Amino acid sequence: VLTLTEYIKLVPTLAEPHFVLAELYLALGDTANATKEAALGKAHYTPHLLTAKRAAAYYEKVLDLSNAKFFLVEILSFEPSNEAARYDLDMILEHEQSN
Image (tube, rainbow, N blue to C red; front, side):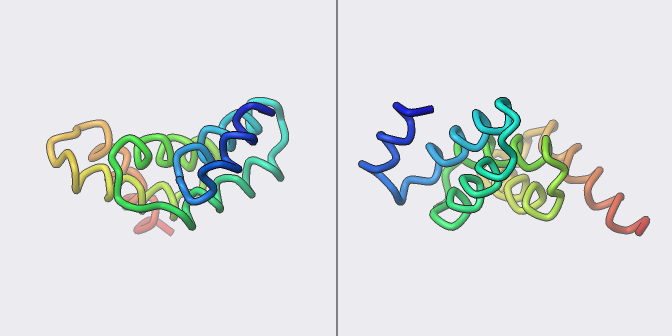
Protein backbone atom coordinates (compact mmCIF):
# COMPACT_ATOMS: atom_id res chain seq x y z
CA VAL A 1 0.00 0.00 0.00
CA LEU A 2 2.80 2.42 0.89
CA THR A 3 4.55 2.05 -2.47
CA LEU A 4 1.30 2.65 -4.33
CA THR A 5 0.45 5.73 -2.28
CA GLU A 6 3.91 7.10 -3.08
CA TYR A 7 3.30 6.43 -6.77
CA ILE A 8 -0.07 8.20 -6.62
CA LYS A 9 1.73 11.29 -5.29
CA LEU A 10 3.68 11.34 -8.55
CA VAL A 11 0.58 10.96 -10.75
CA PRO A 12 -2.35 12.11 -8.61
CA THR A 13 -4.72 12.60 -11.54
CA LEU A 14 -4.19 9.13 -13.02
CA ALA A 15 -7.34 7.17 -12.22
CA GLU A 16 -6.17 3.55 -12.33
CA PRO A 17 -3.80 3.63 -9.33
CA HIS A 18 -6.65 4.94 -7.20
CA PHE A 19 -8.75 1.92 -8.14
CA VAL A 20 -5.85 -0.44 -7.44
CA LEU A 21 -5.45 1.14 -4.02
CA ALA A 22 -9.21 0.95 -3.45
CA GLU A 23 -9.08 -2.80 -4.14
CA LEU A 24 -6.16 -3.24 -1.75
CA TYR A 25 -7.90 -1.31 1.00
CA LEU A 26 -11.03 -3.35 0.44
CA ALA A 27 -9.04 -6.59 0.74
CA LEU A 28 -7.61 -5.27 4.02
CA GLY A 29 -11.09 -4.49 5.31
CA ASP A 30 -10.57 -0.72 5.24
CA THR A 31 -13.78 0.25 3.46
CA ALA A 32 -13.50 3.95 4.33
CA ASN A 33 -10.18 4.35 2.51
CA ALA A 34 -11.35 2.03 -0.27
CA THR A 35 -14.37 4.26 -0.86
CA LYS A 36 -12.21 7.39 -0.77
CA GLU A 37 -9.73 6.04 -3.30
CA ALA A 38 -12.47 4.79 -5.63
CA ALA A 39 -14.09 8.23 -5.55
CA LEU A 40 -10.75 9.81 -6.45
CA GLY A 41 -10.34 7.31 -9.26
CA LYS A 42 -13.75 8.16 -10.67
CA ALA A 43 -13.11 11.90 -10.32
CA HIS A 44 -9.91 11.57 -12.37
CA TYR A 45 -11.26 9.03 -14.85
CA THR A 46 -10.80 9.64 -18.54
CA PRO A 47 -11.96 6.99 -21.01
CA HIS A 48 -9.60 4.03 -20.79
CA LEU A 49 -10.56 0.37 -21.20
CA LEU A 50 -8.34 -1.20 -18.54
CA THR A 51 -9.25 1.43 -15.96
CA ALA A 52 -12.94 0.98 -16.75
CA LYS A 53 -12.60 -2.79 -16.25
CA ARG A 54 -10.84 -2.35 -12.92
CA ALA A 55 -13.38 0.24 -11.77
CA ALA A 56 -16.39 -1.85 -12.83
CA ALA A 57 -15.04 -4.86 -10.95
CA TYR A 58 -14.48 -2.78 -7.81
CA TYR A 59 -17.94 -1.20 -7.91
CA GLU A 60 -19.63 -4.53 -8.58
CA LYS A 61 -17.75 -6.06 -5.66
CA VAL A 62 -19.04 -3.37 -3.27
CA LEU A 63 -22.50 -3.43 -4.87
CA ASP A 64 -22.36 0.20 -5.96
CA LEU A 65 -24.52 -0.52 -8.97
CA SER A 66 -24.80 3.05 -10.19
CA ASN A 67 -21.05 3.41 -10.59
CA ALA A 68 -20.70 -0.17 -11.85
CA LYS A 69 -23.23 0.65 -14.56
CA PHE A 70 -21.27 3.75 -15.60
CA PHE A 71 -18.06 1.76 -16.03
CA LEU A 72 -19.76 -1.19 -17.73
CA VAL A 73 -21.12 1.23 -20.32
CA GLU A 74 -17.58 2.53 -20.73
CA ILE A 75 -16.27 -1.00 -21.28
CA LEU A 76 -18.91 -1.65 -23.91
CA SER A 77 -18.02 1.57 -25.70
CA PHE A 78 -14.52 0.11 -26.19
CA GLU A 79 -15.55 -3.53 -26.60
CA PRO A 80 -19.13 -3.78 -27.87
CA SER A 81 -18.86 -7.57 -28.05
CA ASN A 82 -17.73 -8.00 -24.42
CA GLU A 83 -20.34 -10.54 -23.32
CA ALA A 84 -19.39 -10.46 -19.63
CA ALA A 85 -19.81 -6.69 -19.42
CA ARG A 86 -23.06 -6.88 -21.40
CA TYR A 87 -24.41 -9.57 -19.05
CA ASP A 88 -23.47 -7.61 -15.92
CA LEU A 89 -24.98 -4.42 -17.32
CA ASP A 90 -28.18 -6.26 -18.26
CA MET A 91 -28.41 -7.66 -14.73
CA ILE A 92 -28.04 -4.17 -13.23
CA LEU A 93 -30.66 -2.74 -15.58
CA GLU A 94 -33.02 -5.59 -14.76
CA HIS A 95 -32.47 -4.97 -11.05
CA GLU A 96 -33.20 -1.26 -11.49
CA GLN A 97 -36.44 -2.01 -13.34
CA SER A 98 -37.62 -4.39 -10.62
CA ASN A 99 -37.28 -1.73 -7.92
